[in-house]
Every structure is written in structure tokens, then in C-alpha cells.
Amino acid sequence: MTLLRAGWSWLAESPHQLTGLRLLQCAIGVQLLFRVVTEAPFALYLWGPHGLGQGSTQSVLGPTLGGLVDRVFASDVGTLAVLVALAIGALGLVAGYRTDVATALALGATVLLEQRLPELAEGGDLITRLVLIYLLFVLPAGAKPAPGSLAVWLHNVAVLAIALQVMVLYADSGLMKAYGEKWQHGTAMYYVSQLEWMFLRPAREWFKDPLLTTATTYASLLYEILFPVAIISPLKLVWVGFGILLHLGIGVLMGLTTFSIVMIGLLLFFVSDAEYARLWAWAQRTWQGLRRRAAAGA
Image (cartoon, rainbow, N blue to C red; front, top):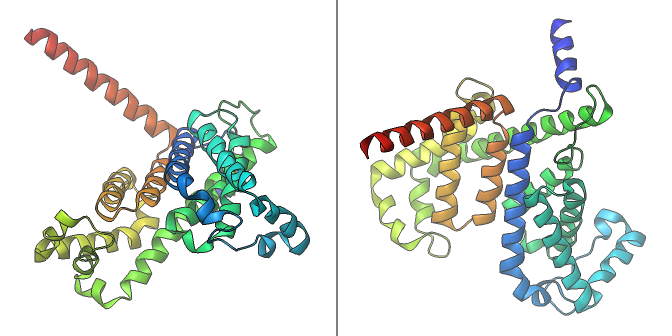
């Protein structure tokens, strides 16, 4: 009963992960803006009425409603309007302005573009869509709901859903890799690094070193497999920090920019509000100490 009471209290009393959720919203907003900026010049070629995309939302919305929604791509203006909606939603997420409306806009535009041209979607887009669905239920930025209210409940349930989704994502990725012969032998990073179409050219020589290749292969494999356990242990902040470095490397070396931005945002989401407060206090003390030393040296 004590455990049930603690769980009830956690869900009902106050909203959790407020700072982490704002950082996650910012990360998703930046990722979507990156997509808008890089893909808008080719929007009509990709999704326009005579473009590559010929997909339909009927599989999601049904033949009647889906057929009506698909008409947005029947004209150049409609196609560009979807990109504008995506940009407005992304800006709202970054700015923290009406994040509930911004999330709905971003999700709607993301689903439309994904269904129009499914072949263009990659890992970062898929996890973004899932997280945007959960973010529909979190409190808007700056909201102050009453303790025990339905809004608090929905917020905390969404927090749990996001956390569990990320745990499943990492565990599934790690276990899938563990079945691969190259990952078992510690050579996977070498083969990945030699892909000319996706890996940074100067870095290819680095991974010809056996020690670096073996270390990075096993480190990424173990990181993902152990993530669900480590993220709820005293090693959480270490795991978050290592994961940020890992995804920065993926973004720079492999060019998976949007995926890395979203995953870094999801890692920052796991840091609690109390931990952010302690980190901020430590940063302030460190900054003040440095200023005093600089003043004394002058």
C-alpha cells in the first residue's frame, strides 16, 4: 500500500520534469525548424501536386476524412501552407508560447508530410512524431494547475509515457545490435565509418585504429542495452552526459543532425527539476568563484 500511495502522490500532487520538458520542446522545435529551412526550397518537388510524394493519410484517417485532408497537397499554396504550419509550431515550441497549440500544429504538419512521402522519414522523424503525441497532454509552458487536478494527472502520465518510450527505444536498439556479428566482434564502428555517403571524410582514418573501433563499438552497444537500468540508478547523470556526447558524435560524424537533436532533448528530459536546480546553483557558485579569482588576479 505504501508503494501505491507513493505512486498516487507522485502522479497527483504536482507536475514533474517541467524544465526537462521545456528543453525537450526546444529541441524538437529546433529540429523541425532545421527541417523547414533545409527542405522548404524543395517542398514542391518533394510533396507538391506533381512531386515525388504520392502517399495518402487515408491509412491513418480513413478513406473519407483522409481523402479530404489529402487535398491540401493538390495545390502549391496548400503544400507550402503545411510547411508554414510546421514552422509556426516549431517556433512556438522554441519560444514557449502556447505550447499546446504549437504542439498540435507541429504534430499535424509532421503527420501530413510523413504520410505524403513516407520514404523521406528517418529515425529522428519517427521518435519526434511519437513524442509530439505525448506532449499534447503535458501542461502548457507557464501553467499553474491545482494540485490533484486532471491536468496534473495527464501531465505526469505523459511524462511516464515519454520516459518509457525512450527506455524501450534504447533497449530495442541495443538488443538488435547485440544480435549482429560485427557488434559482437567489436568491428561495427569500422564498417559504419567507411560509408562514404554518410560518414565525415577526415574521421574515417580514426576508426582504422583497432583500439578506438573496439572501444566505441562496445561502448555504444552497452550504453543502449543498459540504458533502462542506468537511467533510474545513481548513474543517471553520468548516463545522460555520456549520451549527449554520443549523439553529438553521431550528429557531427554521421550527419544525422535531426536525430541527434531530438535524442539530446530526450536525454535532457530525464534530469529532474531538483537536479536542474542543483546544477544551476553549482554553475552560479563556479561562475562567482571564477569572477572573484579574476578580480583578485587583476
